[in-house]
View 1: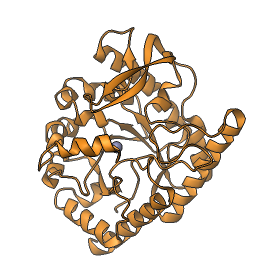
View 2: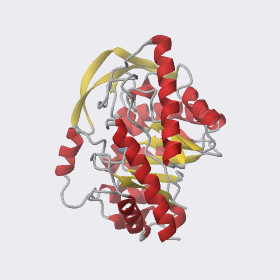
View 3: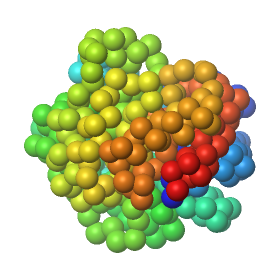
Length: 340
Ligand code: ZN
């Protein structure tokens, strides 16, 4: 009961990449970088295990950014001539690569990380991938000329990698779709169909989708100020997700203005409830975490509730992230006693 997991990313150590940044530059190159990524992945695996996290991730130590880490392995994309583009409905500008030809995977994307986790841990392991809608919102297109066509092309590649990850022994594959909260009307039109394309043929793995209000960066915090007293974006998309073939939905909960009764709309799904705030450096107490779990329990049955972080912890301080992992596990342990 109450198996814990995290949204996905963890801060990169200072010897691997620049710290406190969402798009950090690597500190090494070539073989040294390959080794540094591997060491950082193992380090975070150990930290998660020691903290008591049940479903562990690679902390996304091998990718510079959660979307571009995947795109680097895709043929048909020009990374040399990035263009400036407003993303998440122009919430902020990013320098994005451009699709210039038919898309194809150049190689396996996350096999190294998946096998590292599998060979070094007996815990359940999770690998995250960017969702198709979020990818097309984070890249410019000069080839497909149609957003949905482009999303489906990416979904086919995600499916290819997801099937291979299943063969590697991964237990959960999660697609990150922060764009679902921005383009809510497009989720039922094609967003979920694209995810269905991405999970086609998967048999053993659990499939998850993470939908949040973004990392704790200024552009996102400012955006949240404009969303009013109650955040009801989830209300527009949860009914369609409840009918989808995905097993789990990961969402933002603690300190957000999401009315918790909306969780009821995910009937039948596992819900990864965000009980750790990634936009604040204050460490939650176990008591607070258990209390948030208690509140969510009113709307999510015990067997479907997985305590999680609100979002990734990539841009955070490393020591704070470790303390938050411990708080997450301690809070879940307390909740197990309390809500047995
Ligand atoms: Zn997130």
